[in-house]
Length: 400
Image 1 (cartoon, helix red, strand yellow):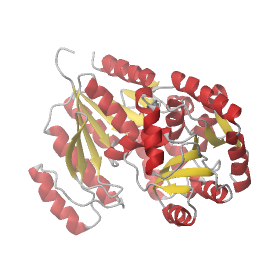
Image 2: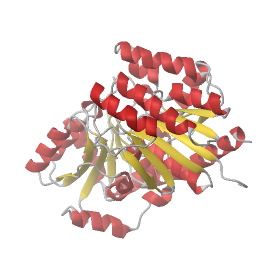
Image 3: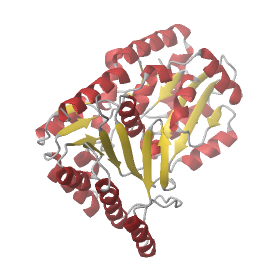
């Protein structure tokens, strides 16, 4: 690239903890782009500026009161991102201030393209692109109408915002084939599937890493372990996993994350020595704990709004690490891919009894080895190298 092109990524979330945002931004930076990411101080993040793997990440302050809004407006006028402690609650005022911050900082810098993650920044992404006469990309992480329909006025407004700006994006990228098809039917242009696939070199780690993590957790090297690192909420069916572990002391559970089910997890971890609670796991540490296990657990409620489209990060972390996945049969694109590669340890229902049945399958050494081999072959087909090339090709087309 003769001169570096500058990319502005917008995400209304904690960019440090979003694997899709981080991976895309770091890939572009590694290929000669200068990348700024404007995130927001959700999930107890603090506002401020940091540099991670040559990506500049601005975490903008979140506003929850009128007094904070006036204080932030003064910082905004000056164009200096303050270092404030984060909050977890969003609001209409917070989104409006995020838009104003993105405009203030975005207009003050030269950019060649805007990459908008999810729907909240769409109006300001479109406006910045129009004012600067540059292309912009909409990155759809989720099926918004399926996820928000019937959930109140704010949800309806979110759907309407996406509907207005979807056709105005120069290109749309998304996580899976099912969602890509729906976005095309709704009028999106130049839709490209860039899955949340993982770098093989980050997940195919030497056995010494597995040994180190197990020693840290006071686990034997021979013990069978199931890993779940992610959002801890009822829709992820964490309770049956923990209940099954309570009845199977030879199976260890390595679990980390954040969310409303955290008290359940910490309580069970105190009662049972085979449940290992990690707390919030930094994104850069997820691979190390993943390879310490023998299988990955992910059981999304089939009644969840996003179930039909589900292609979670956990699936591709499992394949990249050559680990089979304990999952509900017939739920989302996840099931399609696991069936295709043959790396599923299937549950018919999200119950303790079915999870115990999955443990029994993993106890069989031959069956476990066959599942791990299938997962490794799946990782060879679904990995970040393929997704990265699609991303770079798309940027090349839009910036030609």
